[in-house]
Length: 102
Image (tube, rainbow, N blue to C red):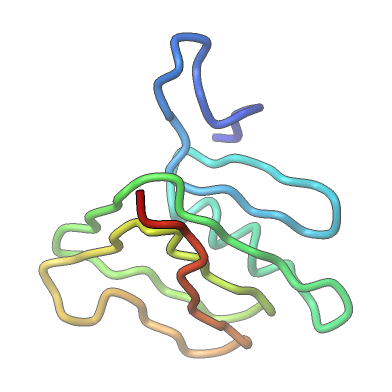
């Protein structure tokens, strides 16, 4: 599900992640939805997927098979009980942490 700003009017952050391609940023309630959107990034127009909150995938991992994008941890944690949090089988993915420590 896509949300407009990532936060409700009360200020609570609803979106797990946002994806920016070009000048357009879209917010997603789940990491899986955000990865699907970020996978649309290309060499000519790469995407940036930014975590908006800490995400625990539990006993699952996140598959990535295509796209050109940066996964910006944004000072957040992406964890899973399995040591393989990300299962990257294709695409061109850069992992960065561009957040600022408060």
